[in-house]
Length: 221
Image (tube, rainbow, N blue to C red):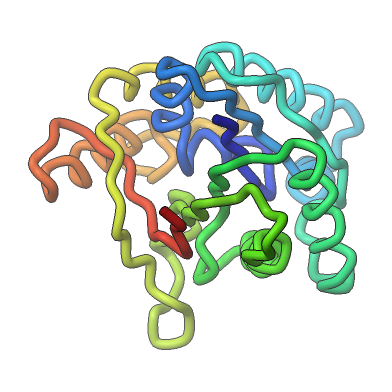
């Protein structure tokens, strides 16, 4: 079985489903992260930061035991400058080449516009055509983006699937720590402590020690 993680920026893949990716890899799944944006030009204005983020992403994948990321190199915070068709066609090619059965992507109600664009394009690229191998599409929360949206105007993240990750939560924390430019001090939601608390909170809601939560777009059995 092949699993595809679609993420707008380096670090979204581990924040959204890093522990689940590690668990699925342990169970024999092939897991490929695809990172659409370069994530450096807007926040850092440093030519060498993108190469650092790509190195961090590769180190993160190694910790999780998943495949080396694919970098699409699109401009950070500018996905909405492309047409919906252009982004969808890019993802369609990735899906056509990799042929995953399971796809993880951003939640459509995130406050981050790039995340919204990736979600919309994923819906198009994974539409259930007869020749499609995609059987399940999950959306994940991206800490400090999903929970910061205003639900009177954005769709609320309403998880309907929970993966037990008590054995791989430590790998998620170790993987995120590879992104040294992105780790913050507690109580910032992107601190290691807050990430652990979030997983334990989701777990406690469903009788587990730790969990990652997802909203199912569609699953075909």
